[in-house]
Each structure stands twice: as structure tokens, then as C-alpha cells.
Image 1 (cartoon, rainbow, N blue to C red):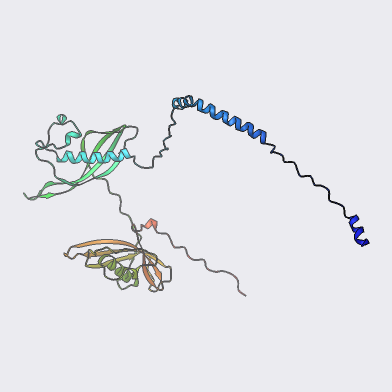
Image 2: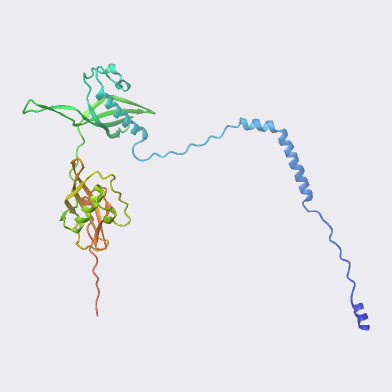
Length: 332
């Protein structure tokens, strides 16, 4: 009992804990002021509404800046249009006659012409050959070509024959602002001068029994006449599509040349460029002679067509083979 009494004395009654005073936020007064300020601004905005609307209406409207236009290299749209304009002009000029001038009057004043032909000139295959802006002027030089029907008289006899030679006509077009106008009449000119013959790199003649020749013959037969599966003679990854429907019933390679002599058993990755001259025969017994520039690549000991080249390989384009370096060193 004494023990319990002693403990009771040692135990102290807990002190009364003061509850913390409830304090408002330190920003309460500021928020009240902010609320009053916002309310005042709202009423002011309502009161000034008509004035604000008037100010907005009086302010100049924003103008969107036009995107910058960059002129691509080559002919402008107007210069290309001059080519089409000259093409129509030459056609109207050739086809006009005294009784039926057609739409030639849309290009020039017919009253200024001395006379028109009794018979119109017959023409076909009219096309623009060149469009050349004249420096430091508004003129554009356009050359138009077409096959014109003409009568040829033989010097050795009294016979005559009709021919359709290719004729060329020069036209001057004035381009001022967005308008086009022809200046003068079309002028017949000489045909463009042909360049010198290009030397090709195919110096090796390939026999028809050569494995490379067999690949070329089988590939062109499948490509042009539908004889066989095209993929069998094509390198992996190529996407050749045969002509469909096949326009020819027979394809014969009668001349095949290469830039280097192809190996009978080539190694993987070996490449040879070939030029094939072929004879094509249609179901109506019509015949054409054509040439194909092909690239052959070796795989698994045989030749496959890896490309139909865009153009033959000229001598200057042929890269000289670089010999592989031979190993050197000293042995023990």
C-alpha cells in the first residue's frame, strides 16, 4: 500500500494544455482588398465597354504577311507560258488561209499582213524546242518545231513526192507584267546543230553462248515478250516490271558488247556493263531494232541483271580499275 501511495505522489497531474488560438490567414485582409479592387475593375470595364469597343474598331486591322516566295532555278511560270503561247501562234500561222484565217487574228492584226496563203500548210507533231529569255529585255525567244507537209520534185525526173520534214520556227514573245504579246511573225530557222558522236565504253564483244549473254537474252525475253519469269534473271532487291500486255512475240539479241570481258564463272559482287542491240517482232510482223544498256551483277556463280541503265556508259565515264594492293612483308 505504501508503495502505491508513494507512486501516487510522484505522479504529477498533467498541466492544462492551451489550445492554439484560431488565427485567420495573414493574407485575409489583402484578399479582401484584392476582391474589392477586382470588383471595382469589373464595374469600370462594364462602364467603359462602349469606349473599349470603339477603340478596338478604330485600331487598324492586322495584316498577315505574305509568305516569302523563292524562285527556283530555271524558267519562271511566265516564261513557260510564253512557250505555250508561241506554240499556239505557230499552229495558227501555219493553218491560216485567205478564206479561213482561223484564230490568227487573236495574236496579230490581220490588216498588217500583206497576204495569206490560198491553201493552209498541213502540219503535225508541233512542239516547243527551246525557250530562251533575251538578256536585259522583256523578250523571250521561243523555237517551235513541227513536221510540215511539202512537195519534193526530183531533179532527175519529172516525178514528185510528198514528204513531212521537220521544220523549225523562231518566235519573239514580249512579257510585260502579266501579259504576253507576240512581236513580229514566225521565222523559219535551221535545225539545231548536232553534237559530235559520243564514244561508248563497250569495247568487248560477247558471244551468244557466254553466260552473261544468256542472262541478257532471257531477261529481255521475259521483260518484253513475257517469255519466262523475270525474277529468275534479276538481282535480289530489284523491282523490274515486265511490259504488260507483252507487245512483242520474239526478242532476239544479235549484238552484245561489254565494258570488260565477263568471267565464265564470276565471283559474288562482280559487275559488268553491257549494251545489247535487239530485234523486236510484233504479232503483226512489224519489226523494231532497239538498244538496252544493262548492269549485270554476279551472285552464286551466275550473272543477274541489277539495273536497266538510264543511258549508255561513255568512255569518259568509265572508271579505271584500281588493282588490289598485294601483301608485302618479311617472312621468317
